[in-house]
Length: 185
Picture 1 (cartoon, rainbow, N blue to C red):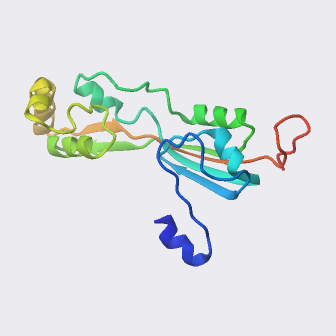
Picture 2: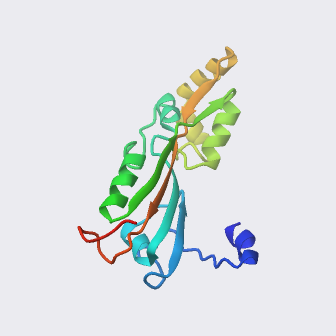
Picture 3: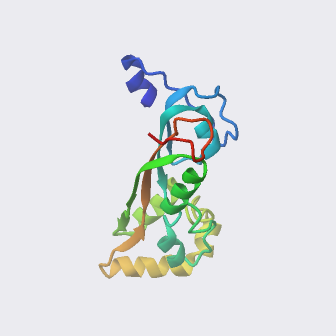
């Protein structure tokens, strides 16, 4: 979408593959680097940004889906504190970035029936990956909590799950390496 919208405006948009450990670009090549819902290596981002370049990232906080996981009696397949705003700010600061914006959104997902909850688990990075394909074996494994959720919905209640997100805008400093002589301006 970015390429389609920005190329006519003269913006050179380049994508990387998922999980690229080393970004396939020259040093100090870009004014802006974006990462939406993707892992990033702050040292690599800094390497490819020009001095004063901007890194903007929107991330899914690792608390996303924690309540659904608990309601289904499944063990969370990741650490709920592994991807947080504070962690992103710390790692970017440690790589020498100046963080200009750090904002959280404490989003919620509201479900009014079991079908919508299961549909969501099938289409997102599910906290219960064993249930996502909805095979007969998976449904049988989670039968008791699924029945409990069905009764919860049948009684007219909704189920609310966390869906937190965060945004960070950080700038590469105007010097090669961070230190006392480096000006963030």
